[in-house]
Length: 182
Ligand SMILES: [Zn+2]
Ligand SMILES: [Zn+2]
Image 1: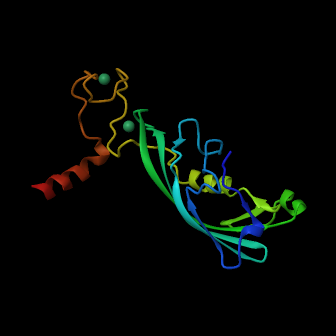
Image 2: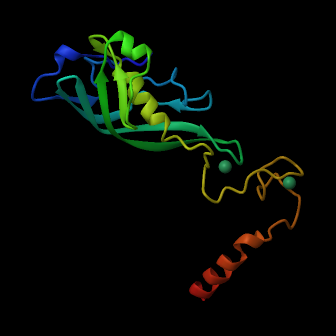
Image 3: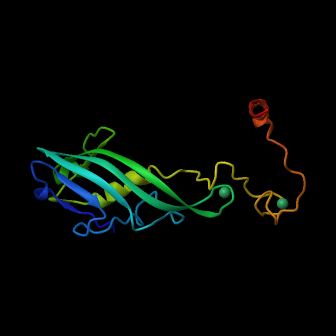
């Protein structure tokens, strides 16, 4: 469970600033959130700064969250660590339980909440999950696995020879690059 919970009554008129990690809110743990798959590990030292302001039945949440996540490269399958930074700009609409069940009509950045306590942690985790790449790459130039031997293409363990030709789709780009560096 994500630990960051906020009671609506705890949000003062001038707003509530949350600096994560904050011991009074608990650590933000996204492990059980959809989008954070088995292959995505979030380190506990997630940091960020949020400002919550309340306007009648709406709570505006804005700020930035930073986390270091461990992902599996979609080409070479190696596990690697990377930083993600997520801009938070949400409107939480406090609705009655019935409206909540019937799905209130919401804009893109609006989320319906009900009850006196909001599970801000899961909301934040869901937002961060959107910033996790669908096809993570350990490196933009990751050569991927060799279809013949299954090792990383061009690595010491791949002895499959002269498969070093440039993809024809990149040939034009390579010529430009050669021209620039010449
Ligand atoms: Zn890779
Ligand atoms: Zn090979």
